[in-house]
Image 1 (tube, rainbow, N blue to C red):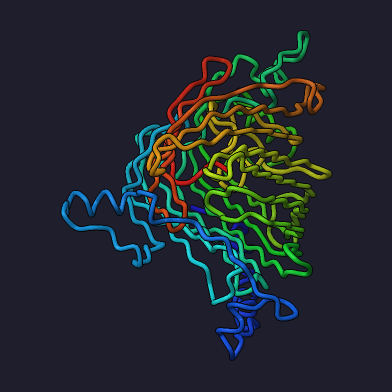
Image 2 (cartoon, rainbow, N blue to C red; image 1 turned 90 degrees about the vertical axis):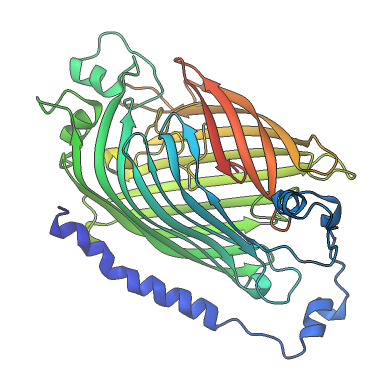
Length: 440
């Protein structure tokens, strides 16, 4: 059962729901929709680049050809932006997964410059005893005046724990320090109940530049790990050193962010930049177990390498999180696959490497294989680094990963891909990763 103090952060959720309503309510719809759609500032005509979807082939076309083999494609038909698919996946973190998933993409309003809004929801169960339900969204109101980002998660989880740090052993350390670092990367399973609410509201203050604020609350209860002496696993050692309870915690705080985006698509960009930097300030007076201040950065750059095939792209990504003061719960320490989409560091299990100072850098080459764009390919590399409590500094030790994969075009209207990747890393790590949409 969750402790009563764990529920205090929920009292602030209504405040952010009202912020969402306010953001939608302040969008002004022009009376002359034709003028708004066709004219930009000072009456200059907007020339919107078009993507020839008629020449592309996706799962909708495949279904039509199977069910109606003699029916020709309708070039005037507008594909739906909603996809409902079985949520079948497999990777080292979750094992085998079965469930259902829905993703949606739509441009709101009539302004052609409005960025694509995307949302997803899923319910699933895995062979490792994980039950997971989530809803997330990234919404741009007409004209990009507001950007709303958030998620809601309920889960029964089994979290693999490989210790704190980047897998570096320092001779002569104490037994508890050696346990915390776990240089042999021996896995410990941590069972828990998990709830997460996160919502950020951004306001555009200049072209493509947004300032935002919000709140995040991570609540974890019924934490159970196999530790009969209360100091035999990395999490037990960390909790004892930093004053956290062994069976529950709350990490609730305020978010203050600056965002710049010029991506041409939120699902699969061919060009543009996405950058976000911000502070998270956890406070005990809103229910957090400990006070802390973190600084996070997220930078992505997309370079199209072909005018004829613009989906031939070099994509670059750097994500980092840095503790500036205070203490954060062990399971909230940044690390592998702890970015907002849980997709970083392919080749390693989630949180395989982690530290209070953490950075991941990735590069991916994306290219079409079939002329109709139904099948594409990718190759990728990543490099992780983190500090630890043995004196290892950020960027002192680097751990590489990489792999290759195929992409199947699921929905050409929203550029939604089915992603199938095989990746590998050090310490014998390797695995198959199956998801919808690109990792970044």
